[in-house]
Image 1: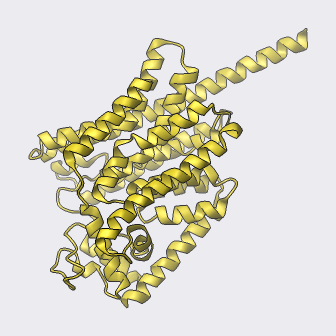
Image 2 (image 1 turned 135 degrees about the horizontal axis):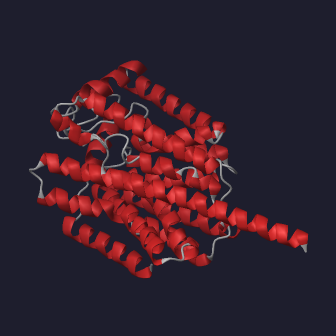
Length: 397
């Protein structure tokens, strides 16, 4: 286990050294939010010359949700100069990690975790490739994944605080929506209601600032495009090369993600097992990386799945084969994007094969997580049967 964690960390560091630091995402999102704060509708400016030279041009392919024009300003430091915003985004990730560490260690005893378990759970976040990827590009995706994990952990005790975290996470709905769906299934209505209220108020503020009707901002988001040419469309993206319309592919991806999430959620809810509350979100975490277009920052949410694989390996499995599957599952959740990244770099011109390898990654994630949930609930059922037998034996005696 230690060797795997070290290997994941070294691979991530190596990628960071080779790739270097490039604040490409920060530049685009900072400019979108900056124009909004200055009272200029940013959507018509996407891919066009700079409206204000001091702010700069918004690169083609950048877009965001209308409610993110204001909330995103707080995440990307749009009120700050660009150079300061670069430091601000890094600091945001560090603070998010520190808060997560506090939550995990302060509740370790309540959850029945050993100190080593809590420490390793945090290391799975720190060494994850997507955290480095998020920092490299100046993207807040890594921090938003951490916000969602925090919300999952505190929603029972602090639903309103969780709602604030979810509201910010919804600036990247492609990550947050499946998690929000499970929160609704779990009855976290106050959390979702507050998150929705914050996002709606932010949307309204963006409309007032830019002088564009709220629905007009939503229309412009679609008009000027969330996706770019050659955009990976999710799990079934290779079908695009067979002439299938992107809208059909995206609809099919959403359908697969919903069925996968709900089916496994029902399985978890029907079984008594450890960490049941957090386990209900595991299928949604997996679905969130395949149900629609993705980039490398979004996969940090899979460290939740990685923790459960770790726990199987360290505390449950007793046979070599099952232990190996658990270990491989953990490594896959942590480093799948490294393997995909290497393939993408070496086959950059073969767009079909690039989509194929990303699709294979998506199916592998779903398959391993389905195994994880089924295995976890199976272990719980066996433990329950053993407990009943022991109780019956004690009663007989």
